[in-house]
Length: 252
Ligand SMILES: NC(=O)c1ccc[n+]([C@@H]2O[C@H](COP(=O)([O-])OP(=O)(O)OC[C@H]3O[C@@H](n4cnc5c(N)ncnc54)[C@H](O)[C@@H]3O)[C@@H](O)[C@H]2O)c1
Image (cartoon, rainbow, N blue to C red; front, side):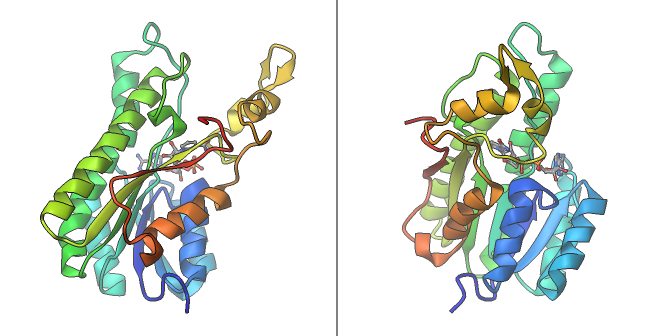
């Protein structure tokens, strides 16, 4: 028996990195993945590669009407929606002194407000589908601060507590919809690629980031996707409102 047989999962940020790795796993485990991303070229290419088990919808997660179209498109294509992965996100380095208002808004609009809009947009269709599971990607930087990532930490901390509200609300309303957050350490995806070639002291950016993790390496998108698959499936049926850390020991 496949772990996501006939489950339909909408994946924001599905064109790249952790979202793309999760879409691949969903299809491999018998489910259907709808890749939703602002990168239409990469998103359509991956959906084509995955074949009948996948499709693509264009989505800017900061646009409420686009979310409505993405959810409607998912139901139109596959008949229901049982899972939502909010993986779209952007990272940027800044401090309280150098972050502009426009930059703070941009990061929080994509990472935090985008996750709010995703959860809100999917609930009516998920209820009609008989329940489901929402997974929001926060970060280790949603659990603790960093001197170099003010707006990112603020946005990911918001995702962490938004998740708990959605979980408690759905439980109280008896919707049979769970919602959990995932907190990755540094994962080798296009998001952090620009940092790997930088020099920090006498180290490359890659070495510096690797050494933050007691396991001594970066994580792989597939390793985070495996945790997300667990959360999307019934194997995690008694987990809601919880934080799932995948960080090579970074926060231990
Ligand atoms: N890579 C890491 O080290 C790391 C660590 C912790 C958390 N995360 C989080 O994991 C999630 C996935 O990141 P990733 O590492 O796979 O990065 P990635 O850059 O490979 O993928 C992010 C995707 O989000 C899409 N996206 C960005 N803004 C969007 C918007 N406004 N609307 C729609 N799509 C948009 C991009 O087009 C891209 O396809 C993000 O939320 C990120 O903050 C990543």
